Length: 116
Length: 109
Image (cartoon, rainbow over all chains, first blue to last red; front, side, top):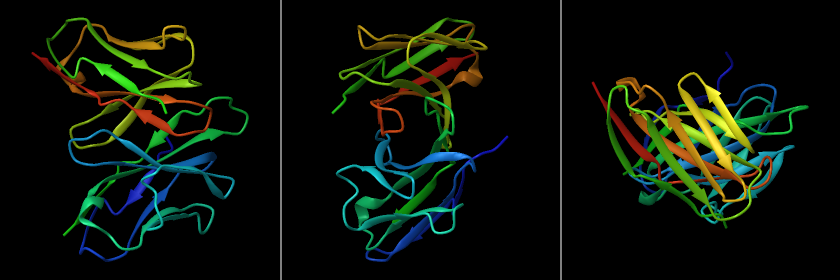
């Protein structure tokens, strides 16, 4: 069964460093998402991506964040200058097949980002 | 902005019991998602529904659009059902999910 994959599973970085989190969505999906979950808190939406551009972003998704779909298969989240408060589990999700009216989302296993 | 509330926050049951988790939201939606999060953190989609009722095995999800309320039921609960159950509202198709806080379910043998 197709699944969303994410790498790495755990990333440790120093404050101020850039990190890139990688995702491979399910191949025939049209919508791609990044969410994050700070330890002990609820999952929060960061950004959605459709037709090769950002379709929606939250107030969390400021100028230090960017997303890219560089090669038609990978979907990346870049954090330019990490802060301690960026430590969280980051989930990629994909959904929406051609011809389907509704958009079940399939989640990757997550990348745990630890900023020291 | 949609507000999604779940109850209860924590639920402990004995194996075999019937479980109900409730979810309410404040703004009209295109779909309501029920998700399961395992202790390792992984999130699995259980249901996506926009009206009525859906059933998968021992899990049943219902939604009342007029009352902006959904319920997740688990029949004949089992210790392997122990997880966090999360509801999430999707306001328009393809758009962001707004998540509830989750319900920690523990089923004891």
